[in-house]
Length: 472
Ligand SMILES: *Cc1c(COP(=O)(O)O)cnc(C)c1O
Ligand SMILES: [Zn+2]
Image (cartoon, rainbow, N blue to C red; front, side):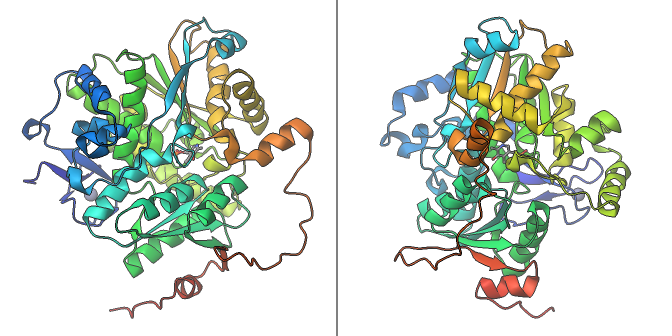
């Protein structure tokens, strides 16, 4: 590959490369996931992370085309895959790291050791904006007009928001599993004007469908299978380091759903280390919900490891086969991580390898209890995010994390994303169990109701106003 940035297959026995212009989400040779890769020797890379501090002086909207205003693009030298004039940004990533001593005390940690990274403070209320600005920038450069995603909620909110912030605007199409989405998130997709399809089925079914439909109709895919999203999500780690004056913590704890975020973190630290910008790599803890614990079962139960990329895929196939046979569907209050077949699984294994990581699972009860603690002692978060703090409690009690280590929990989504879960926990009232009145068709001039669609390719194309192209 002659270019300075390109896509490359993560399979060590293949390593096929693709140019950035090629819209391909899995390797055409071997079907493995793709990475965005760089020829760093031919790129201008800072020699120290403190290089980025000068950007604090130009973080207004006018300087540098507003790029330093973004908490993602002020680190653009570390994700140089798109020219500055193609970047689609709205000031995402202006989030904060809180040193929370009150919660540390509750957990039995030494004061000054616990840090909460509030990614819910992004414009659409979740960390997804970090990745979306990156993937939209590429879509913009490629001149794409329609983008689509399957979503447990936050991806759709972010896609819907960025679609209309692109210039020219794009059409955002979001696929949502019926009854599987918190209302805070659904309301965003509708309010931001996305074409919203409620498919009969869960997230995994929606994802399979959207990949198929995007491929057949030439719509650009915005799920975390898209490696450009993960490039943007690396910036979460850069900001954690920045807020700690570039001091590397001992642990990063993150919830595991489709496993894009943890994969991005592993890539970020691998690159920073290889570029000589950090001297050590923190450890990683990925937290599953017990009702959606595929990674936990594989890594802690089956001892599945990355093995330099030659991991035992049959172990995964076996588990998925068992899940199919026993009709096991994921189930957890933390809807953002209610995923049984995480698409980034191989990259997550790699991240665990790079960051000497481990996986834990926590129950819905533990998630809600720790969500209430984050609310009481911090600024709150949504259920999936609180899995990190519940996982931290577990790792402290196992004496794997010690009370005087520096720990950063990534709070992935905003408190107000899922008020139903919060109200139910504190009052016992289940808003979702309340018999709704019969629906009245919306009459507002700006109404954008979701379309109910069967989990069927023709029905979905019809809902998009298209017919399938004839098979060649
Ligand atoms: C998407 C999401 C997750 C899961 O992240 P993955 O990258 O899919 O593992 C966790 N929490 C929240 C709030 C999310 O929106
Ligand atoms: Zn390949």
